[in-house]
Length: 408
Ligand code: GLC
Image 1 (cartoon, rainbow, N blue to C red):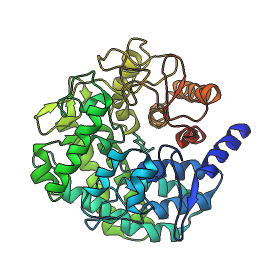
Image 2: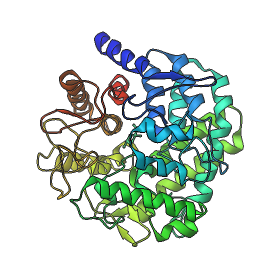
Image 3: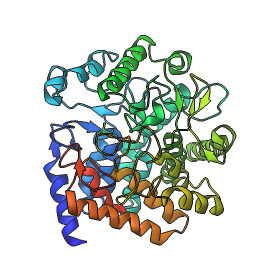
């Protein structure tokens, strides 16, 4: 493991930035020169293996710019607004900032909740209460916002995302129908559709349940599984701060989310995301179908069936370099240029690794880890990899490969 640790340390340190107030890590200096919400949670977990102070700084920084609603945004720019399109090298992306609600310095949407898990992992290492005391109020405000603004009448405590980017899987084919797109299309059309949603969001005055439902509103399986898990971790953090009422509230909500999963998202013997705009379950087969392993939502028998019929099936997800983000059987499957439409990403592998471990499939989990290591060995720290050849794609010097350190 030592050489791997050195390689990960190098990427993390090269991507580290500091300004007057904050220290944080860029996912990739060339392509992603800002701070991202779920990336920073991954970063904290990676850093926890060799640089605990940097991991804590990362979390303090990522909670530093909540919107007035309490929502933690998915990007903090840490730079002047006018420099953003230039830095990003994508003029169009500037729309996301200029059309957002006038908040300077962040985006106006969020990403999957993983902060309480990352904070808990750090707390477990050295019982440092000061980190938890510092960040807990921001976490609480964020979760209060999610419950207040992102629940949809008729779906209990489940949350809706209002833009595919909020899933972290920007162009996943799970969202094609909701965006009115065919399985094959040019990537720019997809980006345009997502940017249009940002404009609607601004016009909606950011009242999600009452307004965005008309345009895009998806109760996404991975987002809600991470929410349920993070509520449990948040309850734990509330407990260490002796906030017993909060702890009980978050724990109760976690239980309610799990029950709602079965009631609203379980169809044809699997959990499927739900499009509340078009009133339909989403059947496109992506790696999201393995997230119930991570969240412990399946019986052992269901887990076994899922693994043998899907994960290990070469016609679905059993490619030479697993786990493809979209099933080989889908018309949208595009292993070479697909981004989230086929290529293998390290974060899904990390979730699936832990899901398999949760159900006791240790050797299958080890196999995911070995294949992930082989990808780094063959192609370095890249954003995605071709699931068939292992060739690296997308951003270079991308941090997520470091998650292999946290496959243990
Ligand atoms: C891409 C990914 C998203 C990630 C961001 C920064 O947009 O789809 O999940 O947060 O890059 O790494």
